[in-house]
Length: 194
DNA sequence: TACGCGATCGTG
DNA sequence: ACGATCGCGTAT
Image 1 (cartoon, chains in turn brown, cyan, orange):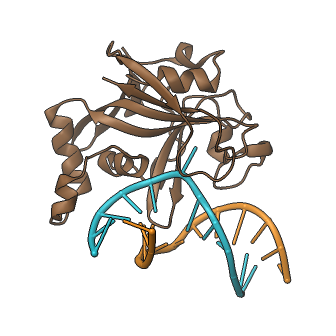
Image 2 (cartoon, helix red, strand yellow; image 1 turned 30 degrees about the horizontal axis):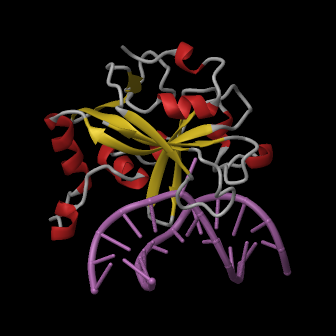
């Protein structure tokens, strides 16, 4: 079943980050349905120095973070890549969960992800590399870009949504977050073993 | 208007 | 371990 408002309501961002492990991110793309099991997330909260919305600072880049939970926040980074977050707090709070990795749910999803990532002839390295085990890789695999920024996954007619298919990780580890320079010590990264 | 940097990735 | 690559935010 689809995740609805009740999944987010009255929950802490940290708990949402943990509970998203094992949930399925679904995109009904023009070429077919892409599903991936979320297996790595990171939490970013309003009082966290490494959060784009730290100190409640709202800019054109991060304004979507201040929307109500369930919105998709897509940001551009390193001059080349996009990454996706799911907004987790009430309006004007500025918290989100970065989706860092998914596992293709089925062969059809895998096929579509390969097409999205390797339009040109793939190099040997690309073929060896895993399809969607990184925040920018999975965003490419789904075909998301800045045009998807601000979509509401809780809108009934949204083509992107979260689903609970009762997939439970064997274990969830938590570690410090990756690629940040501030608040490095917070163990706010969650990794599911399936 | 100028400049430094980044919630990354692929190659060597 | 390093270079690619460019929009954004902060400083001038």
